[in-house]
Image (cartoon, rainbow over all chains, first blue to last red):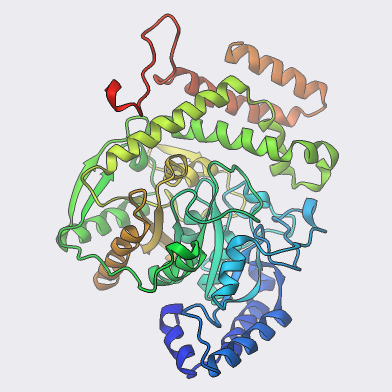
Length: 447
Length: 59
C-alpha cells in the first residue's frame, strides 16, 4: 500500500493510523535484526502520535495526505528528544534538542515518526557497510549492500518498515539506495529543502529529499517538506509521454555499465520512444572530469567539518571513514578552488544539455547492488572500484544542483533492482515529478 | 608544488604519523588531482584573459 492509496482512507476513517503504525513496527521487529535498517526505533512515541492523529482525523481536523502516515528519518536528521547518531559512535550520546526544519514540517503535516534509519557513517560512503551501528543488508539479497548512504531508509521503504522516509544526497545517497533496493528516490534542486538540523557532509552538495514506494509518495513528502509558501494542494499531473522530450547524455555516463543495467535501461528508453516521447543524444563535454571535481570538494568540505573531532576522537570513527577523512586533510587549497571552477563549468554544461528537452534520462546506478565487501565490480571495459561506479551516474546533479529522481525500471540477475534516473530543470521539480509519473506508468504498462 | 611533489610530501607525512595505510588512498587522490589540474577550464596568466561564463555580454 502506498501513501497515496492509504491517505484518502485515513481521511475517511476507514483506516487507522494506529493500525498502520503497528504494522510498520511489526515489520521492523521482524526484519530489523537481519537487515539492520534502523538505529533507533521510537515505538512508544510513534504509537502516541498515531493515536493523536486518529483522534484529530475523527474530530474533523484532517491535516492532509501525510496525516497519520508512519515515516522514518535518516539518522542524521534531528528528531527532538531522540539521538542523532549520523551512523557514528562519535555522536552516540547526542540527543537532538529540537526538530530539524524538515522534521518540523513533516510533524506539522501530521506524520508519525517510527524511528531513525541506518546510514554509511556521516553519509561518507555509498554502501552502508561502514556504520558505527553495524552494516545494513539489501532486502532483496542480504548478502549484498542496500546502497547508501541512505541505505536504511531504502530498506525501510522496500520492506514496509515505514511508508515514507527522508534521506540526504551529497553524491547520490538518496538515488543510489533507491535504485539498489527498488524504490523511488527524489533529490530536489539544491537549496529547495532546508538542511538545517541535518548533519552535513558537504554543505554545497548536500540535498535533503524523500525515498518512497512510488513517485506520487515521493511528491507528497517533498511537498510537505517545502516551505509553506511553496507547498501546493495538488499533485502534478502525469505528463503525456507523447511530446515529452528526453535527452540521453551518451558517453561517460553510459560507458561503464553492468550488462544488465545497460540492457534494462536501453529497453526502458525504447519503451518511452515507442510511447511517443522524443529521445535525443545530448553532450556533457566535461563529464569525464566530474569524479575528480566531486572528490576534491567532498573531501575538503568533510575535512573542514570533521577536523577537530578527528584529532580528538579518531578511534570512534569506523576505520574506512576515518581513513578517508584523514586523506581529505591533504587536499590543497588551490586544488579545491580548481574543483569549484569545475563545478561551475559542469553546471553550465548540464544546463545546456537540458536546453530543448524536458529531462535527461540515464541509469541511476551503473551496477546492481554490490556484494557486501566487494572492492570492485565487473562492468563494460573491465572491473572498476565499487565506490567510483556507484557515484558515477548521480554525482553530476549534485555538482550542478539540478533536481533528479530515481525510479525502478526492471531487474538484473537474481532479481536485483535497476533504477532509471531522470534529471530536470532548475525551478522544475514539479515538472520532473510529472514526467516521472508518466515514465513510472509506462514502465508498469510495459512490464 | 607539483602533484608529484605533493604526493611525496603527503606520503612522508603519513609515514611520520605512523599511518602507512594512507599511502594507497593518497595515490588515488593524486591521480584525481592530476586530472583536475589538466582540465581545460584552468586559466593561466600567460594565456587569454579569463571570461566569465555567466556574463552574457562576454559571449
